[in-house]
Amino acid sequence: MGKRIYTLDSTLRDGMQSEKISFSVADKIKIVKYLDELGVDYIEAGNPGSNVKDRELFRAARNISMKHAQLVAFGSTCKVNTCPQEDENLNQLLEAETQTVVIFGKASALHVSDVLNTTLEENLRLIQESIAYLVQKGKRVFFDAEHFFDGYKENSDYALQVLLTAQEAGAETIVLCDTSGGCFPNEIADFTRTVTETLSVSVGIHTHNDAGMAVANTVMGVLSGANHIQGTLNGIGERCGNANLSTCIANLQLKYGCDILSEENMKKLTPVSRAVAEISNISISGMPYVSKGAFSHKSGMHIDAVLKNSKTFEHIAPEVVGNARNFLISEMAGKSAIISEIQKIRPDIEKNAPETAQVLKHLKDLEYKGYQFEGAGASLELAIRKVLNCYQPHFELMKLNLVTEQETQSKRVTSSALIKVNVNGREEITAAEGNGPVNALDTALRKALNVFYPVIDETHLTDYKVRVLDSKAATGATVRVLIETTDGADSWTTIGVSTDVIEASKIALTDAVEYKLLKSNKGRFCEEGKER
Image (cartoon, rainbow, N blue to C red; front, top):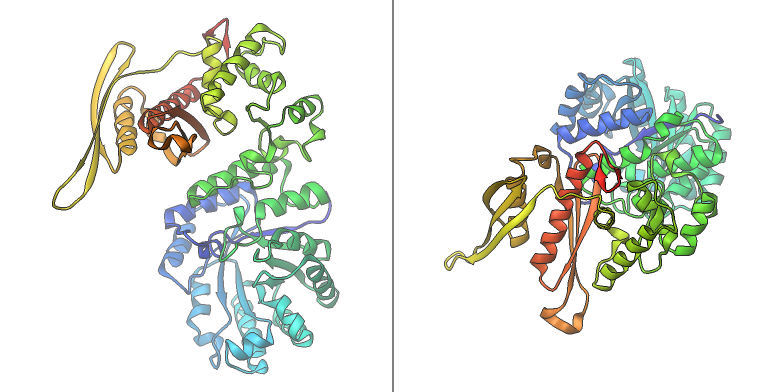
């Protein structure tokens, strides 16, 4: 391996500043465990001086057995005109009981005068005495030079003086921050190179994505001498987010040979990124390396080329980062796309076999009716299994009655569903209420099937989309419903098409449940039309 690069993940601190992100303490502990499993070096778990929740996390984290990562506490230098010993924020950092702490201070003369409302000399004192105090207390200190790159443009001498002050006070790593996220890679490269030639301690890079350059800027920082990178998994963060650590890690290790993760841990990049996204309740669609679309192919010609030599349209093998190749089935696809999906079920079937032609025809017929399988892999597998006689339904929905009522006084609208299912000759009748007919149907179906299949409790819906296919038909138009479901370890999408939105939803919901039950079986393949 090449140059050793240390990683600090700030998902639990900077990531918490992202719009619509709010982690509970339990969520944070889960994320800590995932990040440790991935093999990051430092986990910035929060600012104990800012809120009770972060202090509670640091107390709870003392009982977590870490494999590799170190938890670090984050805070600021002492306040203007105060001494470190009397500063509540610094003492909260000490009470967090982490071996390493990160403190930030102003590296921009503009921020010192207009935000801190103090002198340049007083700012240097805050930095020097705060770091020295923490070092005296036995802490390793990382200093985040806030707004360094903007500050360097304004007053390079003072920005460098801030860094030298932090170094002399005992900071082990000095992190250059593009806090406003407006710098370009050439600026990052030039300024970082100057800093690494000036300082004798480790230099880190912390970038934001306001100009869409966070990952590129992080890479350029490393290529210019930094050996410590900071970011958030999946790039969450205030405004436009932070550098996406999953992309930075993959780029630096796979493209430049940097030493960051072990080969085995690199394979955890995709599952860990997806698990953290699930906890964060965000989509990582289109994200490099770790999304489902990162190695998806739709064009028939592209698929044919990838099957002959994957390097034709893939810059790395998806397995390296724990991902998988995905062929999207559409009107653009031919037998080359279909055969790979068929062989996941029946490895013995060849590209030119009659079964392949039958499957292709069936899928084309469904697409003519409005189905679109490129984003509904679970329904695709079920459809192929039905043609190959490799499918036995786990249940039959025998009766469905949906009622929507509006209370006259409160104008509250409620929906209820009454369903009857049959499983191997046993019937179950269940009713449930919901905040809409689809929610009521979903709740009732899960409630009824849970009697027979408790694994249903592991799943929940994460997305529901309805698209009108023929707007000219107005309320009589055919609609396509896409439902995304997860069980925490995996996620899958199913599709339903009908002129009735409830019917389309029912098709997609039942497919989602059937796919989970199919996944729960030990055998995924079939032989001579039978499950094994």
